[in-house]
Length: 209
Ligand SMILES: [Zn+2]
Ligand SMILES: [Zn+2]
Image 1 (cartoon, rainbow, N blue to C red):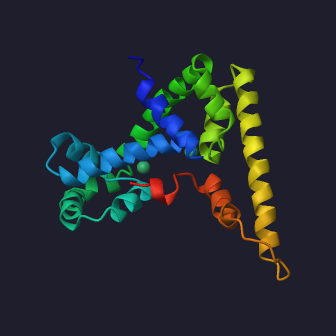
Image 2 (spheres, rainbow, N blue to C red; image 1 turned 90 degrees about the vertical axis):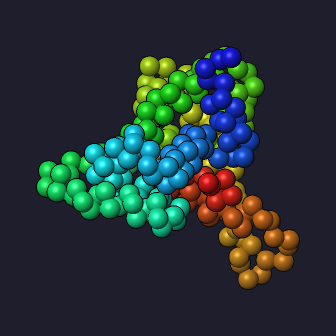
């Protein structure tokens, strides 16, 4: 089986759901990492990473907090409180989740490019997708400087997606006007949130872990 198979399948799902394929893969990583961290607090490797990095960055600490688990978090934070000077006095923080996300992106990027080159159905899926979130677009676009064909493809897909979204936003504004009589179109009513998500990154609530 091709090494990229699992990633490509997940990215194809994401594109069918009109989600950013890279955010979708990040979400799977969050699920795996946070569950492991909280449910196996005694896992020495995870605990060591947590302690030596001085905890997670603010974004990922907040995500962890939202997962609950009072006892799991109590144990983890005790580690940090008992050893706070090691990292705080030297300002040496390394978020293991950020590290894994970066590492994951490198791998996903290769799979993505492989898929576009070798899988016509993957290519087609991307063509009719909603493109990428801002962060992933910018990152990928810069790294594709060696191949302007792919840069152009990214721009085309993104531009088409934004045209569709813009029409929905127009429709939303029309529907909110006092003299609008027609039937309300649901995707248009939600389009302002969709627009914001391009700038926030991450997946829609129903796909979150
Ligand atoms: Zn994204
Ligand atoms: Zn982080």
